[in-house]
Image (tube, rainbow, N blue to C red; front, side):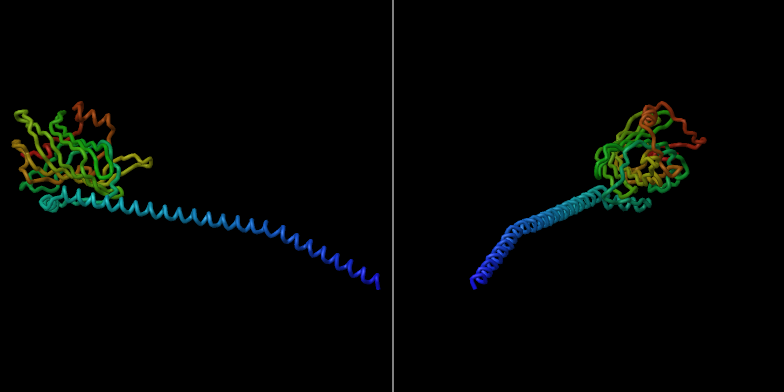
Length: 289
């Protein structure tokens, strides 16, 4: 009886020890597992928070871009209405001139030769000018930014620069490769008969499509149309009346891009080698003989 009791006590003691050991093991494992779970949860929450912040930033940027686009569209609309008055719009419609509008005009900075322009429409009341070749125009577009670009035009006749116009901060509109530039220009015209210089004020509009080569360099302005409207002829003789205008296009249909050196050569009147085949050439605002 004593032996049996002793055995039972030993078994009970052993069972208690084993139970205590299992419990002890569970107590040491649970905190580690909990730490891992907490770390994973914290990482998940951190990633979610990061994604949330990125999404907020994306929406903020989109909203900012939307506002900028709205402001640019308003600016373009205001500039269009400023330059294209009802009277001017009527004149352009009479000439058949269209405006390429948009808030992302192509970059057109450079120098161009508008060779042998021909008048294809006029509001001067005479068709004589539709039969002649006008003098070459040499154009420079610089300092383009957003909807603004600086402009200069020089006209060459018999190795002389005798007509010029220029303007800063002119309105450019368009989208893709299509553009229109609207210029309120002040210039000079030299009377061929007495050599006297007259100050003139004009509105000049150029519309076309920029063409680039494989390297992205501008090669020409395709399908170029050019409108010249006389606002104030300064009393110069033999020029078109105030309020009238002409629509031109180059004989080739395009304006050719040229280097600055070549442009300067023309402007300095060093050469004028174009063969006009004995066709009378006159200024873009002179009255045809």
